[in-house]
Image (cartoon, rainbow, N blue to C red; front, side):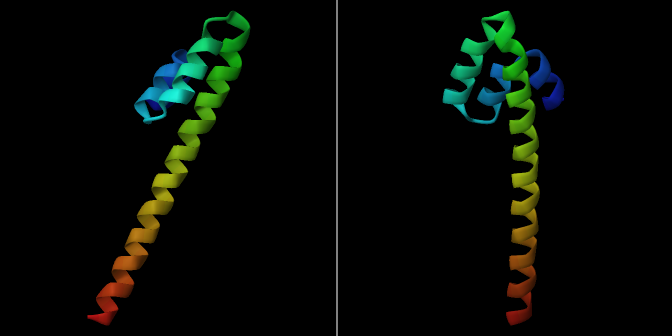
Length: 72
């Protein structure tokens, strides 16, 4: 769903991810037809980066919980 929003409304993607300054910059890019494609690519990259960060965060927390359970 986020990928579709990133293609259609790039600025909304940044606001949903809690990056208002990037959202404002994407909105300015979106106002021009030429800037729409770079804004959409930037939003797609940010969505993929956000997914990777969440996966790494989950893996680190699971690893921490395993180590902690061994100590107890």
